[in-house]
Length: 374
Image (cartoon, rainbow, N blue to C red):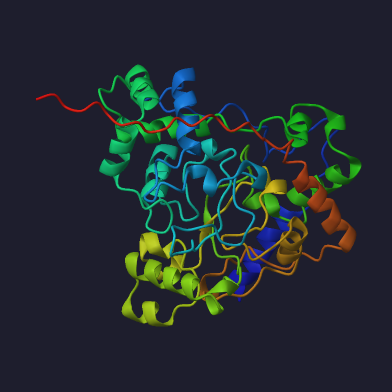
């Protein structure tokens, strides 16, 4: 009891609204700067152009039908506007599709942080058993049958024949161009007092004060990239969709669940799959709140439809799932009024700018290679 009282006292301090002087900005937040570029994969226009083609080309998938864009669609927030993302034919996915926008800033990719770079994420997505299901040697052979790709890989990487590792590097380079740094929030944080409406500024005060949102959603990305169980209910499709059930059980088996878990668990163990520590069951990485106006539905399994649903969820103290023992004690009822919840939603919407809707590139076709001479 004493530990809970101490925690609540700490939350009261964190959640207390601190009046800011005129022109002052919340210290826990910041505008978004240029994305970090790894030294071993520098950006070039030619590499970015190659990565863009590969992002939209189904050539990097097992059945030649599932490009990156099939689960990260520009007109759906560069994600999928369904609870669970699409899967390889005969399966479905088992988690919500995350937006590619601003993914360049994450130090941990995927909802349980299983990849540490966009390069590794691209490889995992292309090869994943419920997504791309591609084999490296087969995908390399396909690339070699496209003259435009042979020329591009030779120019960008010096390859005699396309190297699949370089394909993932090109895709990552393209994804690092998919950033949004000119939202109303960014303009406000850079000094433009008129960038946020009065309602959005009230929402910002709640975000950094009584709402306690800034404890986890902080910094330029508005994510501390830590892991929490906040009580999101299980995906309801596992109750009545046989294909979803099969895919889910496959994931439990493939990721090393115990016999008891495999036979009894009906919820996503999250970070546990990586750590195998019971204290991590049901935990997921804190997502960025940027571009979320377009990336509905929300949470790792899409169980919350709108941003208002998300705010109400937190206002009620989160929810209930199978892993109640690991639910974060940070998640407590907030006591916000209807108007205050509206203000908070309005502020979160200021974290999104105009939709990013590029034209799809022309995709080159495979052609037979010249017959070998005797």
